[in-house]
Length: 219
Image (tube, rainbow, N blue to C red):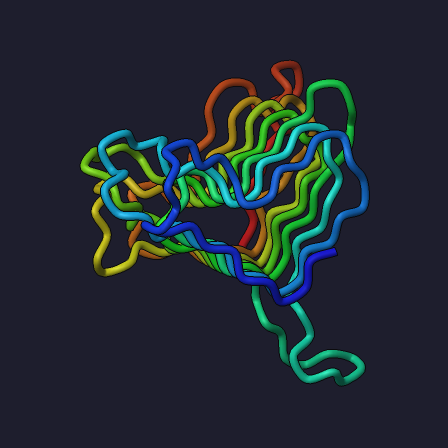
């Protein structure tokens, strides 16, 4: 596991091909508690994808969670994970497994996409904070808090999404859902402020034979 670690890539990094602070392929049970992930490199904004990932995984099961900061039982104070300055801070996908991911008590700032997930059923993103729109790029592309593609069974609850005062993007999105299918998925109990879209859904997200079944949004 990783506990209270600081990962940073900056202008002292001498190579051009930085990929990720943590990369995982077909692993199980990795825990990450109260860590900081930062990309503070300057001069890499021309190609909007060049700032890469904090965590990049394929077919991996792992847990990102806050670290208890006062050692009481139950814990009453947490040290959150921090993700700052990445193209996709956490990027996960499944190719040949059904492994899933949990992200809890984490802060995301100045990322193009905070959490990007493809084909990871039952992913959990809860109690986290997303500042959307401050990614350092010269391009005015949409910037997104959470983007979920081709998956179902997700839990997205009790998160906050807001556009910071220094935002460079005119198109910040909170949660983007694409093709969640016909199951009764929910986006529940989140807060959204000053965004272009708080929630955006595209492709198939409901049962065409029973249109009241499918993706729902609940406060």
